[in-house]
Length: 92
Image 1 (cartoon, rainbow, N blue to C red):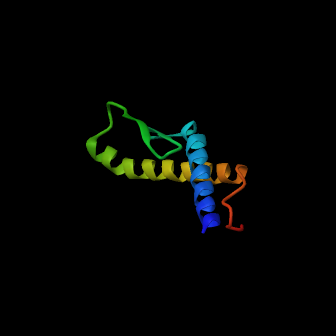
Image 2 (cartoon, rainbow, N blue to C red):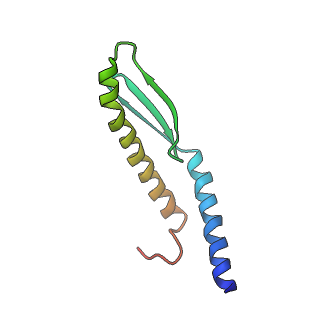
């Protein structure tokens, strides 16, 4: 029982380290006058659009830009996980 508690504590500690490592990362996606910056915790920290972008174009572009940002952050997460030694108990 105590070994399970230690494993949980270790996983929480590793998750916190990962979160801290990702906090300093960011991705920038720009397309057709729309720019989004997303940090490593998948929080949008900046979103701008050129003045000449129509509402319809913005509505059409936004999902793709956000999805591309998420994919890029996931790649960073995977790289950081490998650098940190992966997840204990899960083999590659």
